[in-house]
Length: 492
Image (cartoon, rainbow, N blue to C red; front, side):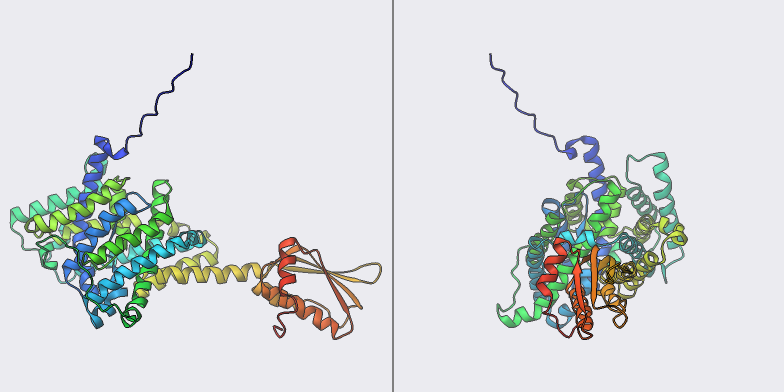
């Protein structure tokens, strides 16, 4: 009698659990509230109407909830993208900006197909620490304009907000503390009638839904010439910030994300955003930290953040406009404190100087340029240079005279452009006999510069009537040596 195997019961999505769904909804609401002043500020930075930034935040969050590779990560209009596109908006107007955002999304999809996500493994930990610390400082410094030249009541309001955010979790985690702080401070301000800076003073909120538009630009090569450099900037800066943020959330949540999917997902989100009149964007680490620290772990919170944002600014604009900025400043200060890697300061004296240099250079360049992508790029470059210098000195050359009079040089270490330059100077060309053996059994030839150095060594011996035999090459090194030897004349 045959046994009938039952069909496997389909796995139920985690967000269908009432407890999880409640956490995701509340976290999404907090993020939506925090997105409003940020989107308005970034719109002003880009030189466009606040609606352009708010619509971008809505479309980016909703689309990336379906296409992204990192659940619970928030994508919206960002300051980095605003800095990239601001010159284009100022010189050519909004329509060219929208076209550049769409093209930038196309570039991101192409970069994803080319495997750009795999480059993340080349970013050292010290650069990641610098990225996180610089970001925390930028988030905090972005709140300073809201604390300068304001009524004195703003300061105790911010302090009260921070007290709620830090102390409430000790009593209960049923409701996100940042949401409670926003509700309490808003209610207090309205009840007492205090005249404090509020969200409504940051810019006009939209009163209608975004709609599909085609950028009104000529479809010519001249248009492509104008927008392509900015589109590339949107693509590279957006992917770098998004992938770095995804890696950070991976570490915090001890989960894995699909970086390739995140890369092309960002591209799709930017294409949709451009066609719906948004300024483009990428992952927002500040709002992502709010989401994750509030307990969100699924795509539902990302989707609801965008959906709530649209409802808040369109349907409930009058209510949102009375939220005091002090409440949102308290939330963002909390985010900056939670984001900063305080452990990196406590262990600073025990870290190697090279790693400290990499971390500090990442922070310094990021703060100087207000561009996380440039800071990370410089940090990686400094790390590569210091690493090359460090391993270049690990190459050792030992000279031994054998019984038959032959001199054998044994080379130990990695041979590449930095170490092979020193290799050339470690031979006794005048004193050695007619037969010299260079033993590379304990070495590896990594590049053409090393082949050029070996050719220069054999050539210098040849001018003195001496013969050099190179032995011990492993298969990979032998193939590289055979391919380049004799082809690099003049390298030395």
